[in-house]
Length: 239
Image (tube, rainbow, N blue to C red; front, side, top):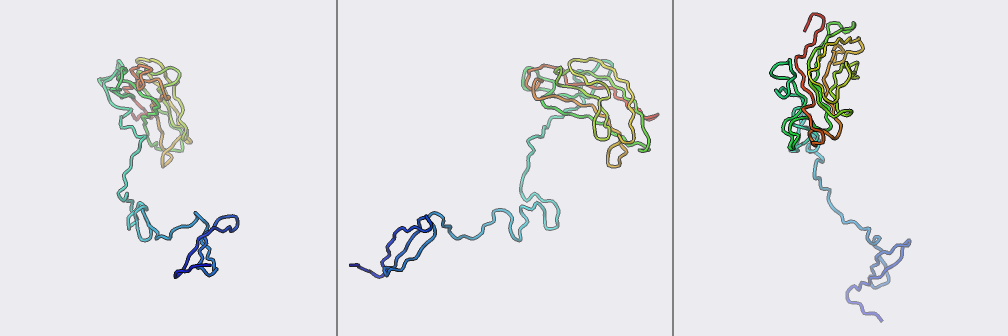
């Protein structure tokens, strides 16, 4: 015996393909199956949080195709605001002037104070276009320097660019060196020239350190990494 008021709906569970599905009965024996339990999704409109049809935000350009940040800000966490090579009167080589170029940093917040830091690859580069890139060019490099770095790991290097590969001009310097005079020739072959026009010779002073034991962590107290003065580059009769 059944009692029907308007439309009686009974709810039961059925098995369809091994998964429970909802059933709705209208009281006359007709069964209407719903979707798999837990798999239903509510219908919704598409909401664009950034970009979308007819919008430029997210494309990083304006209507004319020029760059546009569209309100975004950016930060390079690898950027170090401290200059690695700087003109300073700190530990100037004897025989130089009152100032020299120093690969180092003042005022580390520890007992080591002035010196150099970890994981440095600091380059002071000289570049010059030659008159004829089809012939070799010999230059003369002169300077005086002090260096002070962890032996076996951190170095001052004097190098030239040989077609994209930096080569040592003289042996690299670690540990303590005071008042070292350099006076040496370097010959660039046509294949050594670099730059956009393939006509540029390059020299560099490189201050290099590994990831630990420097003035930054105060595991190695120095007056480094290096101070260089009286740099002179001569190309033929041109200085």
